[in-house]
Image (cartoon, rainbow, N blue to C red; front, side, top):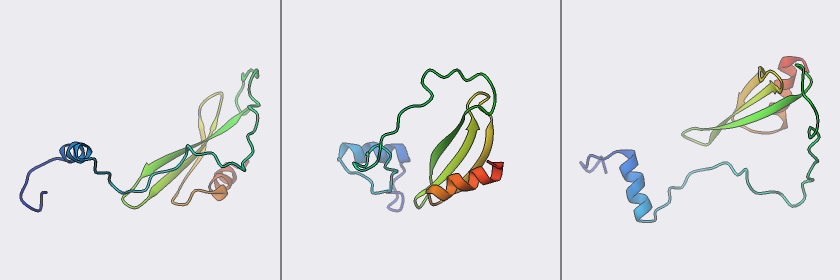
Amino acid sequence: MQRQGHKCGRHRVRRLMRLMRLVPIYQTPNTSKKHPQHKIYPYLLRGLTIDRPNQVWCVDITYIPMRRGFLYLVAIMDWFSRKVLSWRSTIVLGPMADKVSLQQHGG
């Protein structure tokens, strides 16, 4: 629209597209669909009192949208102190991202 001389912001364009039921085509992370063959593991921390550092670590994966695809930020944190022990950004999400983060921390 701007190339044709119309002044408009991206929120207006989104609203107009929504009114016309136009859906932009871009890649989104698919985190909600369960794979039927993947095993469901029990929650092992239920009933556990976490009262000291390095008792439990957790991994957090954040999807950062980029112009083409996503950048994945993998962080390993201490559950008790919420301190980030290690982090790694990658364009390909897989087991190597977690492994590299653990190796950086020495785990």
